Image 1 (cartoon, rainbow, N blue to C red):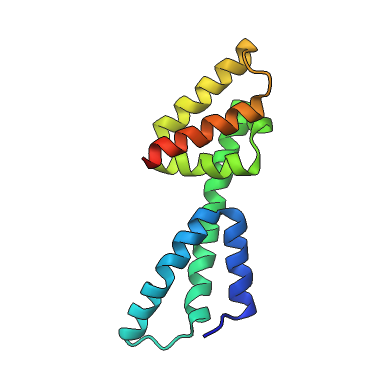
Image 2: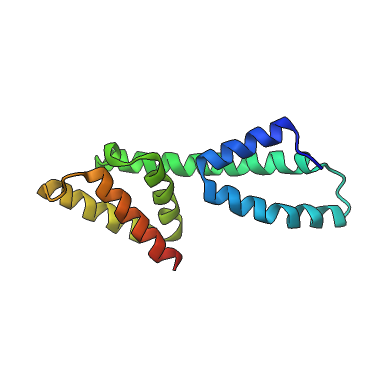
Length: 135
């Protein structure tokens, strides 16, 4: 069955906040929804999806807020774009120590004046770290 406008809007929000999470969610959705139906749950896909996506969005937004606050505290937030922030949240979720080391190393290089384009440098460092952590 098709999804309601509200469910679609929420999914679009989830995609804009964290595309990887949205893809994982959609990959799992069919299986979890079918399980619920088999177990006798009488809800439409949209009724099932809306509270679930709302929970995920709230969780992601609180994580992003926490990471952003930390970057502001470290004085490096000006160099972090949306894509890097999303990746940093994921790094933080996988390995908080790796996240701290990455930011500390970045701060030190900035302080030493060793980087011409801090934003570009950080974007590459974040992408490499995330690839390594995902293995």
